[in-house]
Amino acid sequence: MTWWLTRSLGDVPAGELWLGPSERAALAPLRIEKRRADWRLGRYAAKAAIGAWLGVERGRVEVLAAPSGAPVARVDGVRAELELSISHRAGRALAVLASPGTTVGCDIELIEPRSAAFVEQWLAPTEQALVNGAHEDEQACLANLIWSAKEAAAKARGEGLRLDVRHAEVALGEPAGRPGHWRPLRVDWGSDRDYGWYLREPEWVITVVGGERSAPRALTEPIGTRLVC
Image (cartoon, rainbow, N blue to C red):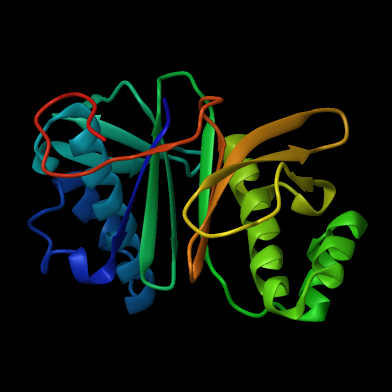
């Protein structure tokens, strides 16, 4: 099963005491306030998700970066048996967890206008046709959804935006439809493909690529068992 949780800036505790020593050391070199706020928000969402998934206090969890840049979770200094992906945008963060050894990547995007130049540069011809052929009210949602799926797939492949996502082509298993329901998607890379899910909210789109074939399930707090939904 794949699990997800979001948190907002207002949820993040003040100060740094909720961070572990290694996390505080990683935060210290970040001087730009927005970058610091985003980093803190992403870590808080991840620690909340891991605490819920494993049934441990968040203070026992540290989330650090591997040499590749991918997040790695540790509990009491020992690597946790789970896979983690984090995304943040516009004051909201998403954390997604999957079983150990399962590749997973996630992304969250605010539904906002994307320029014609952005669509032309980053979306494949079939994706451009889908966006440009949609009703005006749906174009921003589709453009952000497709971009989000590309980012999530690149993370699932362990590359992030080092990978040229212009070569990826997103296929939506079902129309974007009404908010509140996970729907399937596919990301084609020419020789192979990735599978995932997307969730549309009134102002957001969330994508998860990799993980399990069943739709992601939401994590909630407080917890006391290994898996809580």
